[in-house]
Image 1 (cartoon, rainbow, N blue to C red):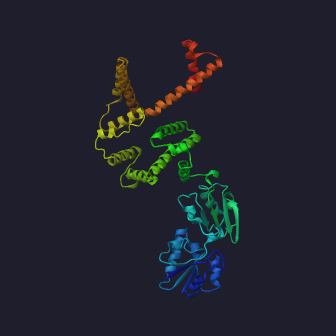
Image 2: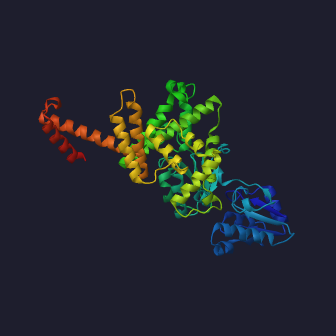
Image 3: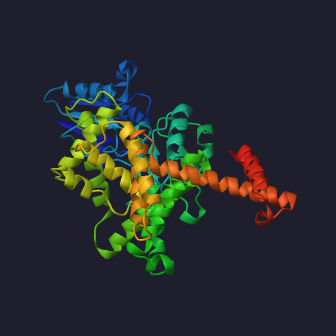
Length: 460
């Protein structure tokens, strides 16, 4: 039988139950001789066993914990007491020790938190927070910050969720003080050094994460929030999603990093907006969206999460398309082209329809045939009657998009670039005209050609 005794934060914290357990044990094991727990046990009995030799032999904390647990189990049916610093249950070795009885002591957090911990408080050892996948901006206790090197790593993790100026309650030995997070590595440390940090109010913070975005949108949609945000519906902000996506595409195309950051945020806001509207309407919770996305990513990558083999990007895309057809229960080309969303831009939808149809065999034999089709549609459009010109014009565009697709040119991007190029040249022409004092309507064609050529040279 193994009993864990929490030895508290300092000498004098040992409870009467803990002292009794140490006195009556067949074997007493102290996690480290370099802690106050060892000194306290020595006042009770002199035959304790220590684990400092295992610290020296272990390559990492996982192997250390395993070695300590193996030692505890090596005493068979004897009554074993394992003495650890702090409360007991929060010790990293104890957390992996199954079936042990725990006699709780005073937690290390008591040095930095007056009263009990808030229900939302997250408690880590220094090694835990270094290894954890993500740190959230919640009230947080970090214990056992042994030295400045560990403190620097702890600080780095905390800076992903808290501002550098956020106040930290820090305790080493019996001295507690308030410091900014940025000053943490400059402190003195020992085995029980502990800190407590909680996020500043939203309006005062400089570092935010996804969950803060959710919280802010919830406030905006609340009774005392913004009347405009409260009034929106899924349909009323449809155009916003499209606009923000195009603005992001523009920033990416220009390789404007600052605007990419801004536009990604704007697009994310639209996603969060729809999530909040859905929650308010009782349609679904946000976890339904995350679950659907993660399920899709796993299911459509059997070459990553399963046994399917994909040796290059093209084969990966084929696997994705194949999985998508299975998910949507699409059994033929007709269903596949009907599945292309009508909400896409005309250019984008046309290209997507052509691409899917081509996989079903609806494809020209060679590039010359496509070029011939473009010429044919141009002739038909030029000779069309007023009633048929719109349809023939559409056929011409459709043929041009097909040509671009076969040349691996994305029609939407190509047209966006050409439009932007034209805009830049018009702006440059207007600048030149303003400089010369000339009026466009008064220019002979030869002079206009000169100005246009100069604009092309200046802006491309």
